[in-house]
Image 1 (cartoon, rainbow, N blue to C red):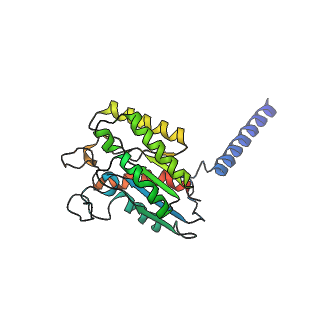
Image 2 (image 1 turned 180 degrees about the vertical axis):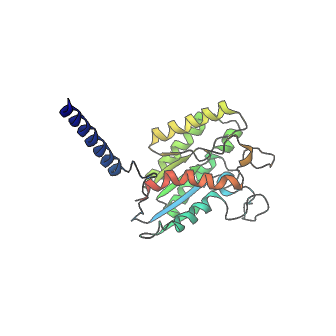
Image 3 (image 1 turned 135 degrees about the vertical axis):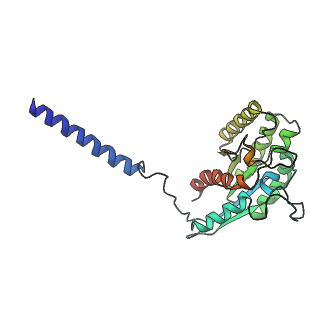
Length: 236
């Protein structure tokens, strides 16, 4: 009996040691996965509407209210890439080509020129809000995104689909829209980005601007982190 007990305890100890080694090898005991700094240059283009351009910024760039310049999630992303030293081995550029009030189908017309001009390696597609507000069906919006992703991938870049759903139509519509975005990403090979995760249906993060769906300054760091989590693994 004593020999069996010793053998059993020995087996348990070996199992614990083996499991620990596996966890360490897989990064299972170290919290967040290690961020690997890219070796290749990256040009990241943010391409959306007012949610990405910055509500309170006019067409010609004049700031007039609500979110201070430099506080949008695209700016915070640029700053974090720098502060984290992600450009230690290769340059990383963040370009914001978003345009307030633009529909996705209008953005589709601008996209080929911007792809040819900037030659981005990664594109964050963040349209759809204005289309949804105007009553476009989720099928129609999805079709436009499929075309956008096709253009991005045609230039050899990686596409990220940012889920900028509306809250003004309620939770049921928001769920329908998000499901459409997830399915569109899967169908096209794009990376789904739940950019508004942690801010939806929370008035703390919404501007009191009469529209009811623009995110305020408090929401920008959260949006940036949501993008960061999906973008960093795609850098090479």
